Image (cartoon, rainbow, N blue to C red; front, side, top):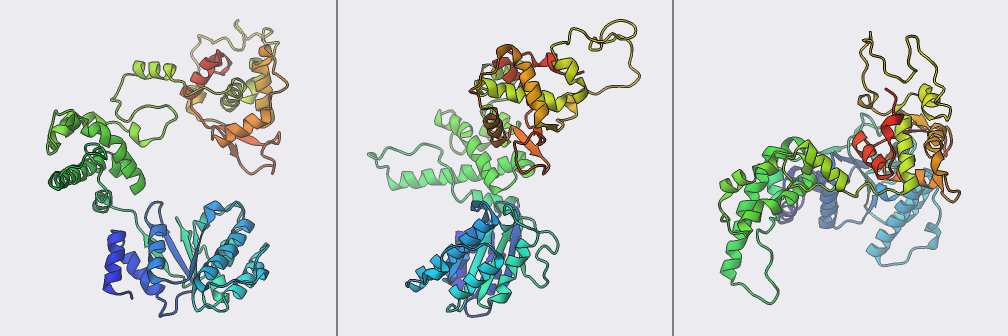
Length: 465
């Protein structure tokens, strides 16, 4: 175990993780053998990467940290592991390795050969794989094979950082697991209070306030910030903020309007109860918790439906290109209209509608009471559609405007998918733009209605009842 001074330094640097730091320093101590595989698991923003990075720097052991989210494929990850291990050993020993270890690494067997050649002169080497459970294009046996590398090379320790491990996901027994639980109220307030925001803006570089005034200002900042964070946690953060990062983000967004009365000279820095009464509307809404493409301020109080509708009409956040907007409208119609109504809704011969018994047409609403209560399709959620059907609807609703030949429709579809406005469903073909690929719209009715108004298209006339 590390000396008490180093442990206290780590605990001061990373608060509320004393147990995990003690476990890691014990298992990874250079004076004792370490397990071949170690798993750190916990939800996002619980300090896993931060703790392991600080512990490895304190222990001063040769290590390499590879982040899986930076690797596109499994082969990319293998080559990144070889390159990171080579750089760490070369930096630690200050010597040049043979170029035989550079180059391609296409399989786990090749990785094993590379690591054995690189680590043959090292007593202990630690390889950290951050977010390995989210690796792209990884086979079901990829992670268990990676975890067995520590058994082949006796001086290698694999540390896998995962979010929520499945039972027996490494297909091995006796693997130590260290859990990083989410922060509770006291821990979240302790972490958030370490860096309080300032009530007043910093003074200009030319002016130099006295030390006594500066110390008093810092005390007021810390006093008000700690109580403000507690109020945010009790009203909003306890049930809605996902982690410590989102909780601190909410506090930052609400801090400026909360302390504005102090800057205006209405209240003092210690009038916390009066500030809470004056700014109670800040803690009643939940708009600050969600990231929206509509720029609604976190300080905006609860407005009526009419004001919100007027704001959406005046905003320019739906400024999509002309043909891209029609692609999005066609996707919405394909998701919320049954395919059996396509001929009736989108063909040019829609005037010749078949007659119903009792008069009227197939799309004319009947005044007779229905035997079955129908639910609007907009309340049932979007349905999947194939790409060919969406393109057919797109050309049908755009036919009066005559699509220009220079418009690359497939590129615009790929752009909508990258913006998460369209979501691909299922595996399907390897080509994401294949005609039989299934897609689903990922925006709601309010957004689609504003997009339709921006291109002067009446989308309600093309929705089936």
